[in-house]
Amino acid sequence: MPPTVTQDTVLSDAQVAELAQQLRVDAVRAADAAGSGHPTSSMSAAEIFAVLLARHLRYDFDRPEHPGNDHLILSKGHASPLLYAAYKAAGAIADDELLTFRKLGSRLEGHPTPKVPWVDVATGSLGQGLPIGVGVALAGARLDRLPYRVWVVCGDSEMAEGSVWEAFEQAGMEGLDNLTLIVDVNRLGQRGPTRHGWDLDAYARRIRAFGWHTVEIDGHDVDAVDRAMATARANRGAPTAIIARTRKGRGVAAVENQEGKHGKPLPDAEAAIRELGGRRDLRVQVQAPADAERPAREAPDPDAALPRYDRGGSVATRTAFGETLAVLGDRRGDVVTLDGEVGDSTKAQLFAADHPERYIECYIAEQELIGSAVGVGVCGWTPYASTFAAFLTRAHDFLRMAAVSRSDLNVVGTHAGVAIGEDGPSQMGLEDLAMLRAIHGSTVLYPCDANQTVQLVTAMAERRGITYLRASRGDFPVIYGPDEAFPIGGSKVLRAGGEDQVTLIGAGVTVHEALSAADKLAAEGIAARVIDLYSLKPVDVQTLRTAARETGRFVTVEDHHPEGGLGDAVLEAFGNGHPMPLCTRLAVHSMPGSATPDEQLDAAGVSAPAIAAAARKLLAD
Image 1 (tube, rainbow, N blue to C red):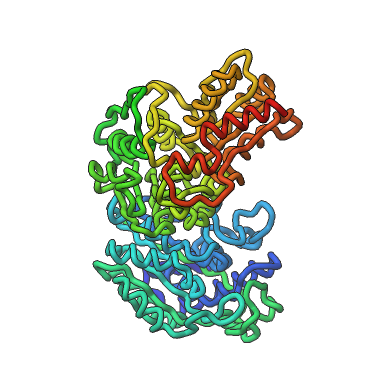
Image 2 (image 1 turned 90 degrees about the vertical axis):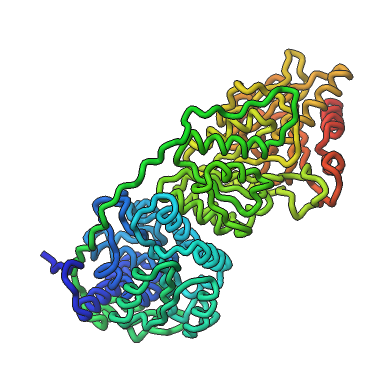
C-alpha cells in the first residue's frame, strides 16, 4: 500500500514538499507518455497544489455533487498534467489512467473538461477561470448560502486578458470573501517573458485597486503558501488574491526558467525524474467538506399565469421576454437572471422587481456576464443572460467554451438587426445568428410576435446546452393566439395553398415583411407561401423540403448579414442529395447608417417591396 498523508494530522513542510515533487514527477511522466503537453507550466505550481490538497481543500472525491465541496478551477488549463497528478495523489485516479493523458478515448484531455467529474468547467482559453469562478462564488454566497470556497489558479500570462479584470471588478464589488485567486507568476509565457515578469507588486497594486486583499509570496515556500491560504480562508468582506513568484520548470536545470520550453515534454524525462528525486506514490486523504444541504428552491407561485397578448395589438418581443421572465421566476425557483446593465432596455429588469435576490447585475462587462452565468449554472441554477445582441460578440469565446463545458445556458440578445433604427450599425446585432448557430449543440430561436416569445422563453428553461433567443426592439403586430404551440425545431406556415408558386421565408422582423409582400403578390395573382422559421437551429427540415417540392422557388429574407444566418440555415436542409429549390437570398449586404426602422429595412433590401420584387424576378427567370 502507498503511504498516506492526511489533513487530519498536521503535515510537516517536508512532507508537503515531497508531495510537490511527486506532482512534478507525475506531470513530467504524463506529458512524456503523451509525447506532448505542458509539464513546465505544471511544475511551477506544484507547491501551490500540494499545500492546497494537503491542508486547505475541502472535497469529497467520491461525491463530486456534494453541496459543501470546494470548487477548484484551473484557469491555466494547459497545466492539466498537474491537475491530473493531484487527482492521482488524492486517490481519484490510478497511475495507469494518468498515463493515458491526451490519448484517444481518455477523459484526461489536453485541457480539462467536465468529462472528468471533478472538473466544473472546461478551461484552456485563458482568462475564463476567474470570471466563471466569480459566478460559482456568487451562487454560494448569494443564492445557496453554502460554506464552500472557490479556488482559482491562473497564470501570469492570462492577466493580460480584459476578462480577468472584469472579474476582479465584479468580485470586489460583491465582496466575495469565499473566492481565492492564486496567480502563478512564473515570468515566462509561450514565446518569452510576460508583461510584468516577477514584479509581484505590479500585480498586487492593480488587484487591490479593485477591492481585493492581496498576499505576495514565494510560491515554492511551503510555509508561505500555507500561511497565505490560511489568510485567504480567514479574510472577510473581500476576495483574496495570492500572488506567487514561481519558476517555470522548477527542479529540472535543463528547463527551469528557460525560454523556448513551453508546451513541450521534457527532452530527457528519465533524467528529469532522477533530478526530482525519483518517483513517489504518496496518497493524500483530502479533508471532507462541511456538512451542507443545498436549500430548496421553491417556486413562489408555480401556477402563475404566463402573459397573454391579444391578436391585433402591437408588442415588442423584448417586452414579452421581460414579462415572461418575471413570471418564470414565480413559476420556477431555480431561474436566475443576469444582465449587462441594459435591463431597462432588454426588459430583464422586470425580473429584478419581483426577484431581486435572483437578479445579478454584471454591468457593461459581457465576458463576465456570460462567465458568471456559466458559474451559476455549475451550481444547478437555470441562468438567463441578456444584453444587446451586438454586444454578445464580445463574449463569443465564453459561449464557445460554455459548449465545451457542457453548460446549460440561456442567452437573450435584444435590439437585433437594422430594424432598431436610428442608433446605427454599432448597435445592430447583424452577426449574432451566425455566431450562435456555429456553437456546438446550440439552439437558436427568433420569435416574430409576443405570444410566440412567451412560449419560446418558457421552453428555454428545459433545454439542454446553449440556447439563444433573438428579440427585437420595436413593437410588432401580434399575429398568433396565446394558446398556439411553438415546439423547438418547428416552424409555422402562415400562408399556403395548392397554387403556391413561391415560398417566402422569414423570422422575427422579416416575417411581417414577408406577410405584407405575400399580400402584394396575391393582388397581382401570384400565390406565395409564407413560412415563419422561428427555430433556426434545429431547423424544420421537413416543412422546408415540402415547400421546395411544392413551389420550387424560395425567397429567404433576414435582418442579418447573409453569412451564417437564416438563408444558410434554410439551404443546409437540402444537403445529402435532396433537390435544391431555386433561391433568392435577401439579407443586409451594405453597411447601414442612421435612419428610421422602415427606412433601414428598405435600404437593406429586406422590406416587403424588396421581397415582392425578388419573388417576381424569380418567377420570371
